[in-house]
Length: 272
Ligand SMILES: Nc1ncnc2c1ncn2[C@@H]1O[C@H](COP(=O)(O)OP(=O)(O)OP(=O)(O)O)[C@@H](O)[C@H]1O
Ligand SMILES: [Mg+2]
Image (cartoon, rainbow, N blue to C red; front, side, top):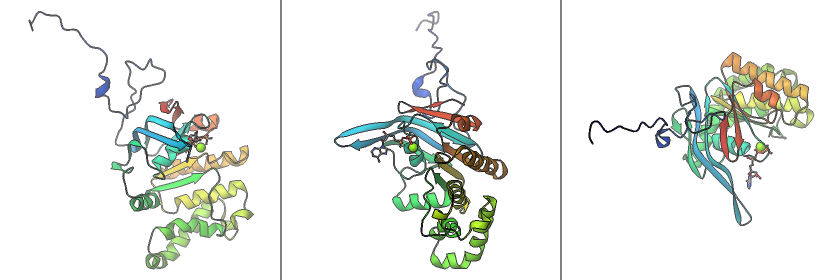
């Protein structure tokens, strides 16, 4: 090429050079801006170009169509979206309860979507706490036994009995923290919805997880109980640095979170 030939300047970033977990700000026209949000040393969980379909009768329904998502350590991240948009599906994939059809899920620099079933069980038990709209407590067990259960599952019987008094002490202190030390021997059907969710939170924390995944944790509660559960989660985040990723329908709750994404059309838009 002749050195005097004008060179056409390409001012747009090369799309193929953008890592798939970088997200385009929804307020931009999408063509020439890349959000500042990228993977940093603070990223604890990351979904890269994740797809997931479900078979219904003979047809396949695509729910997630290339989802990029990240959440930072120490933050509360909310996932919003219409009913059926795939919020629970995404949360289940982040929590290794299900596998994506394609794409990758990473947790603190470790790829987790390709772990074996046993490795996934171990990973969940050691690293994650999960709470759900309908609590998922074991009805035959007392409040205290429900809280202790994940600590029993995570170790051999021998090791459990060796550590039993420490585990019970921790379970009682968690029950106290969620305001239920006066209900230790009650069964779930003797508790209110808010009390069941508090129990579920204490149970999720017994193994000292790095990340709490919450699927509509206030969805089955009246406004006041829901607000107090939210306050409890916020206090946990502020006082212990617990990272939380929470699915919610409630715009007020979403607005109180540090980061906010919306699932729409099978993709994630970052709103905050
Ligand atoms: N196991 C399954 N088999 C078939 N279809 C499923 C399955 N799980 C979810 N779906 C479908 O996938 C879509 C997304 O479901 P998902 O539960 O993730 O939505 P959501 O955003 O959590 O909705 P909601 O706000 O009502 O809880 C829905 O259309 C749902 O019917
Ligand atoms: Mg859901």
